Length: 220
Image (cartoon, rainbow, N blue to C red; front, side):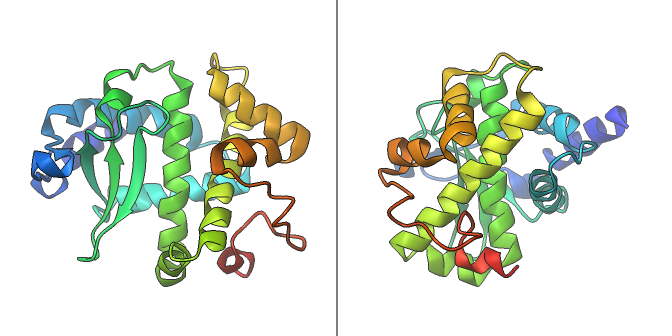
């Protein structure tokens, strides 16, 4: 199985359609240089989660997003403006309809197989990809609404925290950020993380049961 996945990602990351180039003045550079690192991260990430269904929301996030990647529905790009590890990835949607997972150079160049923070960041962006795939129009409309955008971001933090707790903790040496996110998840349902990362207390915006997902996902 491991050899199959390795061969698959080698082919996938060799496809020219995935390795796009843009003007450096736009902050993007070609990803061909980093294809081996990207393959390694994706492959090791799938090893952690693919056959472990302990948390349904996390596993379903992985499966839907991973299938889109494997079916060439998602392109990869590099953006040199993502210059820290914690902001080392983003999920982008373009007017052309193209959707991309965008990597920062520092995120890629600091990766090692035992670096849990890289997997935590990846599952966060997989959640955004998942939400777009579930209902793209609603997801894009939410980006225009500050409150709805907030709930999507908080939902991605929740998936990230669950992933840390059930897939990484006890198996990896967590980063300080992951430890903080896990503490907030277990002790105040991510409210302090919301204040720190989103500059908003979710207590002020609290909803009825199911509030931790955007409106569109509550009925999904």
